[in-house]
Image 1 (cartoon, helix red, strand yellow):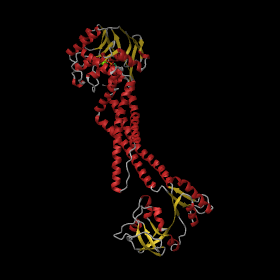
Image 2 (cartoon, each protein chain N blue to C red):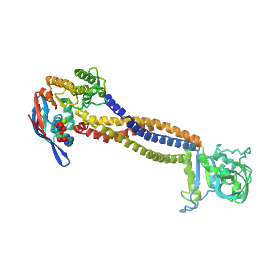
Image 3 (spheres, rainbow over the protein chains, first blue to last red):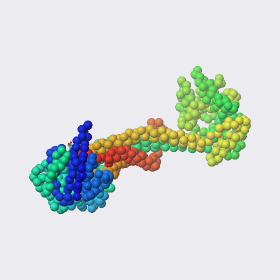
Image 4 (cartoon, protein in one colour):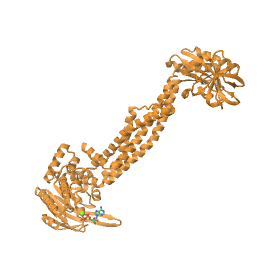
Length: 220
Length: 400
Ligand SMILES: Nc1ncnc2c1ncn2[C@@H]1O[C@H](COP(=O)(O)OP(=O)(O)O)[C@@H](O)[C@H]1O
Ligand SMILES: [Mg+2]
């Protein structure tokens, strides 16, 4: 379960204070599919980064499975990201010097898994997103949709409970976007918590729960 | 680990030009150090070798004649010489009476060192190494015991000192007395370069014609080199006693001289290493620059790696590994360059100056060079690597 308490993030731009998040209190149960919508600059990415333990709040807390992440060290946060969370970014964010298989195996490398096992698992994940025939392609040799599927396979590498997608369909066409949503829906059906930011109404409509953001605040 | 290397390899390959320049910097730095040290050892070896030829020699020279006066150099007497000859273990003791004299040749007058020596002793002093210069068919000859007003002259005196070259059978005037040149000595150079600038006459002429009765140097050869130090001490004690002076006599063994040279070369090595350290410092800054650029360029990638679970330590390791790989490659290339450069310079010196200075490449110097390269690489990679490791994942991901 994910819970935020008075979650606030303030950026200081020159003299001015920008409330990227303003006293956000929300609860996401295990296995829920949540879509976050809202205008650009409303704080969606900031919220996902807090939940995903990429960033630390100015005040307030994020609890993941009851643990207040505000008190954790860099190392402990890295462990939570590695074990519990899988990220899918709008820009795919693959390591462009590595091929698809190596990209998917990278989180397992940081987890200290042996090479053969790692490669075996990475191959399995790539096959599960339908890229069994693209294992040795570099990101530059793949289409946007294919790159995003590699990114999903990478997010799944550590078998995380939570999948976080920041506009995962933002850079691909509608058909591909729908395919990616199908995939995320499938992951949700397997029991994973899926949290997705999107601008697309149709895609948002497929989620069980919608949260609307404006000026750093969440309204249901 | 293998995959860490793979990641590092890809990243080095991706920035080929800059990595190459960095590697080149280390290569040149380490190469310079190794070449200089190897040539230093070579120089030391060749000089030591020349000295070892004379390892059984003790040079006995006088200090100041009166206590507390440093200006006036004293001299030895025939009694001193006789006493030295009587010391056990002494094979030969030869007296040399050297003094600066006015030497005139065809109207030109110069002050030159004129040495009185017994002709039969010349071999004892100089060994067989000293030979006569071939002078357009007139070879000249050695000094003889019964020669009167005859001299042998050094190579430089014959060729360089006077406006006109001196030939065998030419006449010189020393202190106003006419002397005939019976032989010209071959060029010596190195440790015997003093021979090139001296004129040799018989002891008798030195005493009777030049009024030079004082012995300026006693040249001793010993039977057993192991005894040299003891004999030197005994010589000093005997002659000091004869003159009723303390610390009047200085008897220097060649092994002592070799030791002294060792110290001088040690110092020279330190200077050389200090100089080449500058190039290493430049190389270090090169690595730091490359690594900082790599960190900047890959901010985004670092953020992504952190987002998928990399710990600070993982990132630190990757960047340090990259710095080490670059410096190991540079170090290995530097060792090769150093060896090649040392050989080339040694060859160049040999052809240009006909002086043999071998490049002595010691394995411990190569290992040391490699170690220094790695150390430099890791130290200069540390700051950029820490910077990368400390990067906030969200800032990094945003960067893209
Ligand atoms: N690193 C940052 N520095 C300064 N301001 C930031 C930073 N990150 C986000 N912001 C600001 O916080 C607000 C929320 O941003 P963000 O969460 O990216 O919005 P969204 O993803 O909904 O478009 C915006 O006003 C943005 O300009
Ligand atoms: Mg955003």
